[in-house]
Image 1 (cartoon, rainbow, N blue to C red):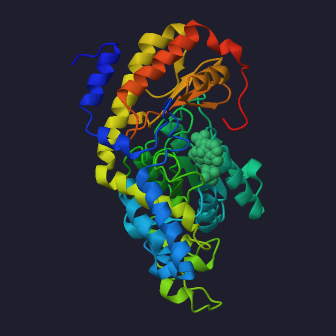
Image 2 (cartoon, helix red, strand yellow; image 1 turned 90 degrees about the horizontal axis):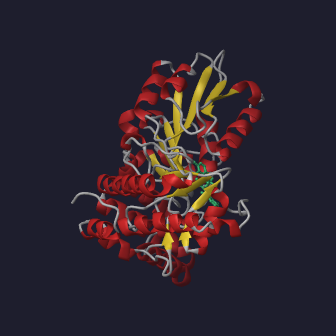
Length: 425
Ligand SMILES: Cc1ncc(COP(=O)(O)O)c(C=O)c1O
Ligand SMILES: Nc1c(O)cccc1C(=O)C[C@H](N)C(=O)O
């Protein structure tokens, strides 16, 4: 069917959507449209069920929940690692579900940043998420290195995108480690991870990626690309719940590396309860765990990840691109006259799973959207992020959101609000 700009066209697309049945798996707002799954994914019935099962194990079994529960807590992190592995193109032993994004970055830099001789610097970029920069600076300071000199941040020519050639040009012989996002949190640009990993290794530099905005959104091949490490959160596209435990990947060639931040849950499991003061680390990515797993923040992931493995990343990516491409054409047609600029890649190979819509009145347009019960998020100073999620959003959702924006702009409804962000945006 040729695209037109009617709601009927969107309904026709929904009617032939093979992922449509998954929408019923989620608790969706009853009175609005959720477009913020890139910040906090929605609760599914399966995630709720596995959480309740673990809670019940605690209620009925107490300490025995570790070994005899419905989902024994002692192996839960490993079990979830096996469910995460296909999503990032890794072997199960290369993955661990543990910590949080920022904690895992600390762990991985503490383990893999080995300044030596002339190579004393970390290479990052100016568009990355602030927490990563705070962590990198503090890791440098812990080694007595001044971040002003030892943290190199590649800049962006336009404030939206990074150029791989600029990053490669910055891979000089004083760089020991590179940490970059897979998908930029504002523009949604995908970096060419395979190309960057190859270029880094040709120069004897280790490279790690922050995969928060790509896990569950696009396929990866971390193992085959030779990426040294990666880390991510499970609460955005993977729908693991607020503050859900994060993930890390360590390429198998680094198995045996001493964890920079050691703790007893990084032990070989059969040795852990020997209570020896000399640690025997696990011989896989599990070595990078630190302390007791946050069981109730892991349990929902069992249900949530099951769906990703059932559907597969290729089908998720296909629908996600169809949604963002459809949204792009609608925005061009309907919203361009109101001064909106799409600050996300037009090219499908470079586009992640959200669109960034720029407008000088973005903060108050977001407030007007929320009054219409449309949930976007806002990134200062001028970005509205909209994430139509493959598993639970529809083409009709996309149509309705764009038309709601048109109504807001046409009637200048945003003028009823102040153009400043909320505390949590
Ligand atoms: C790209 C990126 N990196 C790091 C973080 C920080 O994650 P956390 O607060 O879970 O450590 C976030 C989100 O908050 C993020 O989007
Ligand atoms: N982690 C978050 C939180 O604790 C509160 C509100 C939002 C978040 C987010 O994850 C934001 C997200 N990292 C971003 O891309 O901006």
